Image 1 (cartoon, rainbow, N blue to C red):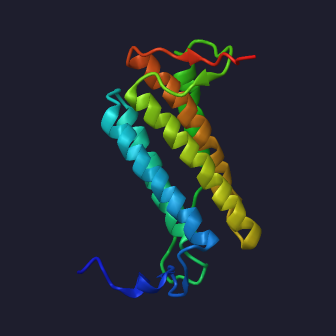
Image 2 (cartoon, rainbow, N blue to C red):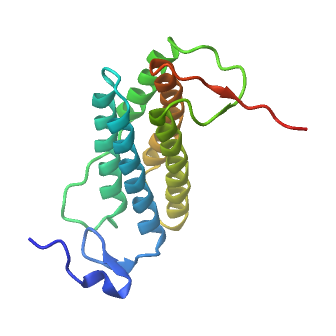
Length: 181
């Protein structure tokens, strides 16, 4: 099977279900940003060497792929789409709670950084926030399952805690933000 089809050369792409839309549409922006986030999490996995982390991130990547497929459908697809449920939000919250037990109390804002893997976590968090904004924009134009927004919102929190955890486990150091006056 060839990867290229030439069907997108005119600036349109196909959705699950067969309809074609502009590559600049809100739907494409939404699932494209989710795909970008998923790729960034691949960088986190490749850089962080912390026991149990890879398994958690692979689970998150599968969820992001599922979200992308949901967003790539206008509801007319004959393909059975995955469902994002509360259990996936609960998984993120439980993972954050476990990491928090080892982290020092956060007393002020911190600057992104601490180690290469932590920096990628912070980058992923920013991309996640953008994905959430794109999905909210799409929701305002057409229906989107609110659970996707819940998941992305919690995921950005998870990525912040993960950045702190990776910094701790890699022997890095958090840099507190010191506003200049």
